[in-house]
Image 1: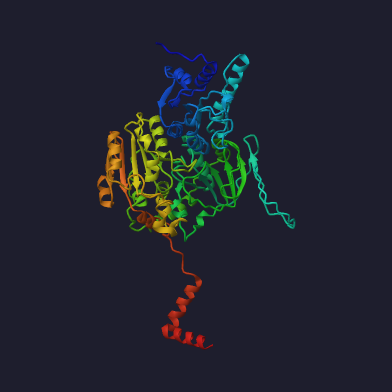
Image 2: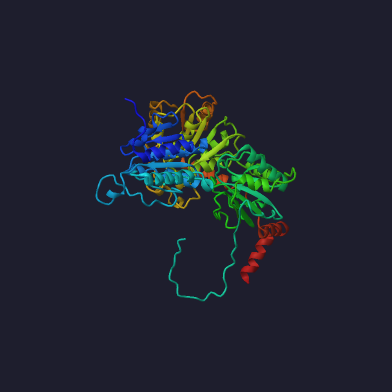
Amino acid sequence: MEHYYSNEVNVQILVALLKKHGIKKIIVSPGATNVCFVASIQHDSFFEIYSSVDERSAAYMACGMAAESGEPVALSCTGATASRNYMPGLTEAYYSKLPVLAITSHRGDSEIGHLIGQQIDRRQLPRDIALESVTLPNVKDEKDARYCEIEANKAIVALRKNGGGPAHINLYTRYNRQFTAKVLPDVEAVNLYTPCQKLPEIPEGRTAIFIGSHRRFTKEETALIDKFCAIHDAVVFCDHTSGYDGAYKVIWGLVACQRQYKSELSKIDTLIHLGEIPGSVFFKFHPKRVWRVNEDGALRNMFGKLTDVFQMSELLFFKAYSDGAGEKKNYLQSCRDECQKICDLIPELPFGNIWIAKTISDKLPSCVLHFGILNSLRSWSFFKIPQGIYGKSNVGGYGIDGGISSMIGASLASPDKLFIGIFGDLAFFYDMNSLGNRHVGNNVRIMLINNGRGTEFRNYSHVCSPFGEEADPFMAASGHFGNKSLQLVRHYAEDLGYKYITASNKEEFNAVYKEFLSPELCQSMIFEVFTDSQDESDALETIMNLVKPPKSILSSVKENIKAVIGEKGISVIKRIKGGA
């Protein structure tokens, strides 16, 4: 029996518009209310269709697929709680500006609120899961058809509008009656510039670029950023999620994380802010002013010093500020020297995520890296990775869920690339169902750092650290998922067709990691590494305190006095002081 498109005119309009807009990739979850849509696309060779039973995983797969391919990705599910499960992934897509189109099928509004099953009310959505939400009703006449057409276009266009994203002033008061303030606080007015306006001159002083998480920069964009830096003696501070791999890249995490040392090189006059939420939590710059460059034109005051917003593409911005020639690298060389100086202070670290990152970060084959939140991403942000390797992490929603699904989605979009993921045990087990997706190929490598708990909550610097082992049962969620079972992941991985290797110490790790880093796409792999939370905490404390503060002037004076008058003189002074 031959199947074509549904007779439901609204379905026909949607399918036609998807094709017109070039949206080919669609991830479908099973259900009844979306049968007309799914049946209409599954025999059309234009579409690339993937199946995912778990809607939450499907949405994260779409995030990874969209980020890797640079193309919009559509989702289709039925109308009940299935649609709710898109929310975490759509949150990631919103904050990461990923073009994900969620198509949730529905029986209509007339039955909402009448105790009828599977009638989920989606008439109001959270603000941060969709840039545009529309309804395509059943079509009775030409007027309905035109309405469906324009509404569907609104949603599809929103995927790319103002920087893109997914498509589906609150002022508090305490009723204070005191009116005695005579002086208003000093505030900074923010200027908004568009391409048609005359742009300001770059102010005098030190200039730097900071890039948060970002899609991969094109060669032209990278060349313009490098030219800008060469002319203005600037650098690009970033982490592995920045998408930038140019000549002026500075991985500043190791310097920025120091608790007892603040580099003078972090003092910046003009900081040009690109991208979205950064992967690293250590970028605590205190610039005199911040220029935000983004097509959305939104006021993002990440550093508290926002003065100018440039609502334009980064390409237009850097073209406007890159006239002339220059080869300045003074600031760049100073930053690189500072990074190397502090890196040279790293002693032998305990076995754990940071030691692993330090050991293999410079040995990676050509690949795309995916990191879990938070310990894995932070550990790798301390070290450089080879040129040409890009990092990804779900920093949009900044939650532990969905990292593996995003990586798998990306791996499906580029089956000839190697994808390596580093995930902690809670993030791994949270999202492990995605490993059983039948579309997974031979280009996936996952390193599971298994310390049996959310080790973040046991780190020396965490608010939970004073609780010690008392943090384990509930704060750190210790003991779940086999409690560091030596067999659980092995059986799961091997039964799904993955190669499984493991290590519990440095010697075992050194003996097998080269197999994990093999550039050949032979078989997908899971490398389970068992670590200890105390070792993880000790390594982090060491890394964050590599530079000790100089002795205070008072301490130096005391040392000088002691050297001159000796121990006997000190004793005499103490006796005299005591007698007084």
